[in-house]
Structure formats: C-alpha cells, structure tokens
Length: 354
Image (cartoon, rainbow, N blue to C red):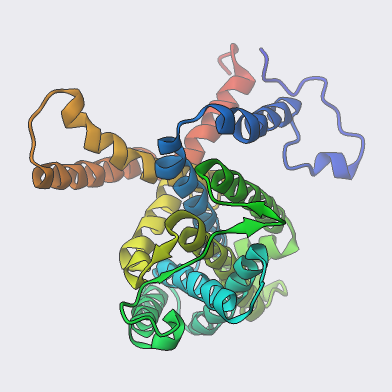
C-alpha cells in the first residue's frame, strides 16, 4: 500500500519525463545516496572499501559502458578489457609527461584516448555484426595487450612492464585513504551514471535501440547506422576508458598489462548479462554480484569447517561460480534488473491479485 502512483499527477512534459517519476522512487534514491555518501564512509571497515565497494563501483562504470554498446546498441564486444587498458595507460602517460596535470583531467583524457581507439576498432561494425564483430573486438584485445607488453614507450621505458602512480589528489584534497578513494570513485561513477541514463533516454539512445532491434528498419525510417554505431562505440569506450584509469590509479596504484587481460573482458560481459542487458541499474547489480560472490564462495569451506587446500578451494570456487552463472541465466535470462522490475510491479499491485 506504500508504493502507489495514485494521486501523483503530472502537469508538464518535464515532470512526465523524469528519471524517477514515482515519488517513492525519488525518496528511495535520495536515501540510498545519503547512505552511500554519509553512513558508509563513517561506519564501514577498511576491508569493505578495498575488497568490495571500490572495485564494485569501478567495474559498474565499465559495465555501464559495455551495456551501452551491447545492451542498448546490440554490438557485441569482447575487447572491453583492452579499452580499460587504453584508458589506464593513456592517463598514466598524460600524468608523467605533463607536469602538474590534475587527476580528474588525466582520467578524462584517458577516456578520450579510449574513445579514439574504440572508434577505430568500431569501424568494422559498419560491415560486420554478430559473431564476426565479436571476433574483431577480440582481435583488438590481443593487439592492445601485445602493444602494451612490447612497446616500452607506453610504460615510460619500464623494464618490468609495470607502472605505478604517485600520491593522488583532486581539487586540492588528498585521495589516499580507502574512504577518500571510495568517495572519489562514488562521485565520478554517480555523475557518469546520470549522464549515461540521460543519454539512453535521449534521441541518440533511441537510435541505438532502433539499431539493436532491427538495423535495416532503422535505416528505412531515417536513422544513419554509421553514425549510431560509431557513437555507441565512442560513448562506450569513453566510459570504459575512465573506468580503466580509475582501476589503475585508484584501486591498484601500480599495474601491468595482465591487469587488463581477456579475463577482464569476459568478467565485464558476465556483469552485463547477469545484471541485465539494456539496464543502467543492472550494471550495478551485475558488478556487485561478480565482486561479492567469489569472496563468499572462498569463505564457505571455513564457515562450515570443511578442511580444503588452497588449490582445491580455488578450483571449487570457480566450479560453483560457473554453475551459479549458468543456473541464473536459465532461471532469469533478463538479469537481476528484471527481478528488480518485477518486484516493483508486484509492490505497485499489492495486496490486489490482479
């Protein structure tokens, strides 16, 4: 009885087009933001920031970028980890080669560099699609991995291939402790998620979805497939590049090319599938699921007092993780976002059976 639209009337187009048109949703989002910005920094332990919150936020941003390309535009990509690497290494090179460059500017420039590379590798989408496009983006993953491992200029002539960043600060404030890093990531992810939500609701977002549903019909009604597909690659790569820069600068601090291997690409694809294709909220659900589930599975033997070696526990964790993903995809192929939408619909009807 508390989650109702009765009595909530819209008197303007602007009110009718709100992201959260229901009052209860707006209250819930404001409460969630208050908890995220105030309660969590004051009460959460350091382990929670390092192991769960910061990785989940950054990976959710990368999943949003991939979801724009795969979920909203229907262009399959298996090279997301490579575009994260482009963002991270580009931001690193801008930092070491331009004295006094602000952290936020370095992150944004990393996103711009990833945009350029993403558009270049998105050009094949104008001619091919489906499995062939997936193979083309997979080739991008292998090529970019090779480039960062072999071309020493990208790593500032590092002999080991690994790079590290100095102490971070933004707008004159330090970004060093886990709480500071969490708040910094939270601000950036919240702002970019809002931008992504407005993009998919705009005219360009409707063009992406028209291309996804049927590109021939979209071209017939006046949508240019070339512009729509390349814009999807550009926007997606920018989000992924910023996420890669955050992953390297804020979460890792120092990294090597293996940090953005093909396993990262598959991990992000799993996030989008499990969270829900074509859903910004689903990207957060998928990232939280992928980050938290392995931690829970690794602790299960200890909780039940089962003696297992480290190797056996690692193999068992991967087996259970894979089985749960397959099971979940069979039970709810539309992802966690669909479960969330179904629960909201039931609350809007409860307690009436119809």
